[in-house]
Every structure is written in C-alpha cells, then in structure tokens.
Length: 116
Image (cartoon, rainbow, N blue to C red; front, side, top):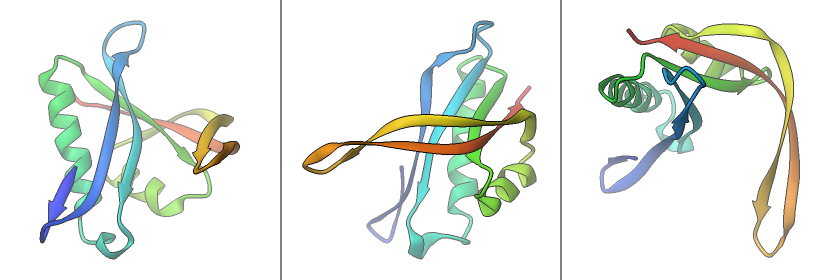
C-alpha cells in the first residue's frame, strides 16, 4: 500500500506461495489510482516488493500482464522483467457487488525478473 497526501495512491499484492523450486514469488495485483499514474508510484511499489521478496530469501518475481496493456508491459520491461514463453488465455472469477461473479478471460504474457 502506498499513501500520499493522506490518500491511498496504490496497492500491490504478491502470493505467499512460491514455485516448485521455492525461489519465485508471484506478483498478482498492482493498482495505482488514475490521478497518481505516470508519477513513479507503480515503480516505487514494485521496487519495494522486489526488496521484500529478496530479503525473504527468494530470487525471482513473476507476473502475468495482459497483452493489450502496453503501458504496464513497458514499465515491467523498463524494470528488468523479461517475457517467458508465449501469451496464454487466462480465466478467473471476479466478484461483482450483489451479483454472481463474472468470468474474466484475457490473453496474458508471463514475465519474470531474476532479483539475485
């Protein structure tokens, strides 16, 4: 969580689980409020998570990003994340207030960064 001017600027989440080898954690949610974008907040959140993952003894961080999200992809590449494999279709349930969960489908590219 990143706060500025007593307001929530953005959040980031990583999985508590690792890959089979126990070295890679997964970043699965990054959100920066519209009014705070393009001001370095996403970079700050990602770098903080990378530092925590490394201090926890893990050496890599992976994520999936929509192939249509060129701004995010560009940010991740700038921060040293590299694409792995070919894009895949992913599906998940997303809660909708007062309604049954919606099924979301998107084509995503897996990216990984070796931290150590």
